[in-house]
Length: 99
Image 1: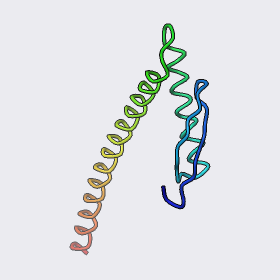
Image 2 (image 1 turned 120 degrees about the vertical axis):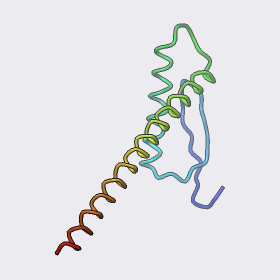
Image 3 (image 1 turned 45 degrees about the horizontal axis):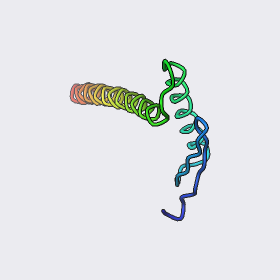
Image 4 (image 1 turned 180 degrees about the vertical axis):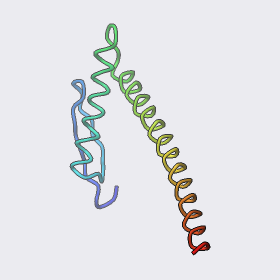
């Protein structure tokens, strides 16, 4: 644990969880909100009762899926931006050589 980390406690499906984090309060609220939303959605969609561990795994899979999609979108965006910048640079260079 670093000096900037603090202990956080939160309840999820009737169980208390604790962990250390250096995340800002705003970040932490967003993280916990996302986890609660995903776990509760999985819980509501589940037929019968699933153990908390399985709900947590499903939430992790959802988060990982979102991460992979965002990473791919970012990589596509970066590639597209680099291509545009190269084309613009070539156009500028061509204009400078003509003038």
